[in-house]
Image 1 (tube, helix red, strand yellow):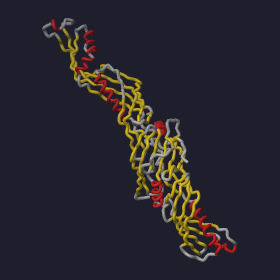
Image 2: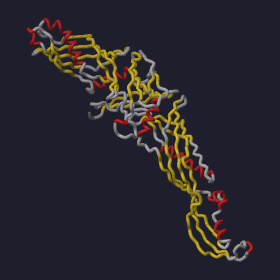
Image 3: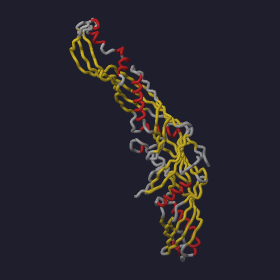
Image 4: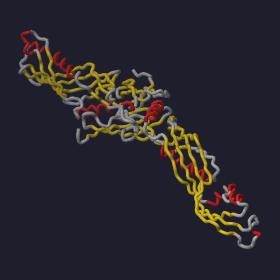
Length: 476
């Protein structure tokens, strides 16, 4: 019975995908083909020589799902059974149905089947043997007991749900694996099985309702806004990705005259004139002008909001930056023999060069400290990385750095654009899910690839529809 429960993320699997998995598991011998053992019979003392039966169950075909119903899965099977009574051998062909309960293996992060009961639908004795009548009467009971004993010794994995709980750019160790807690399994119709999961974090926002999704492919995984922000919170707490960067560069001033006019109120040759009462003049040739800058940008944890229009990313940076306006001057210091008399009143050349040099001056210093710059982006892309994790890549930010420095607007705008570009380059690709499916099946050469067919964004969640492709490596 479908429960109206909310989870951080849900996984929906098709019956066709589960059967294909069972086929591949059988072919790779992940599911045992042969089960051997001994079975003790309760017989009269006269038949004690037949009291222990050696048996061998040989599965001749993969398990297949006959039905999904309520809280159980029905598996069809076919096998050959060999019974050995001392020197006698009986071979029997069997067909039947196993009733299973789907369970989640926390260690392997996969869906498995726990056998409850089974029913034999066909028993065919392939060879006639001489057996006591009492054994012939009990044969069905014996076969049933042996099959039950054998089946209880096997695991039946049917879906590797989560490939890995490791997130990118994290330290090594179990403490840094995403803390996922399994919630519930629901068989929601005769073709679909659904699992709910939670992530153990404090963040508690809108979750995904455990309800039927329109399954278009092998698998669908729906991530709620709560799930995404819990993943981001956990990842940001421990990630090795740099959360602060140092910046340092130079902006060359092309239009020197514009800058000189802008700074004309702060003339660089006024001070020497005053100090020397006009007897020393400062002639200079401006060779180059530039703005050196250096600083630090600190990123805070991003916040993800899902809307019908898309995914919004919000974050905050704290910027510390210092700018140095520097000039390269060729200077000549001249002695004005006419002193304070203006040059236009002395028609003769009365200036004498007393020194000449080339110097770099720091004209002005600018500073912005602990400047909070908000980052907002509704332009992002959803990617699947090599480990089959969903990654959120930011394409553009709406940023207003807002430096109020006493410089021509063109220079300030250039600097702000550089800061914005550096923020975008340094802002991380954000993982918003664990690995969706395991790449390699344990103890086999079986490799799995996830082929994403569609990613649908709704008001509260993101749903990924995908097919699973099975292939084999060259070695086990």
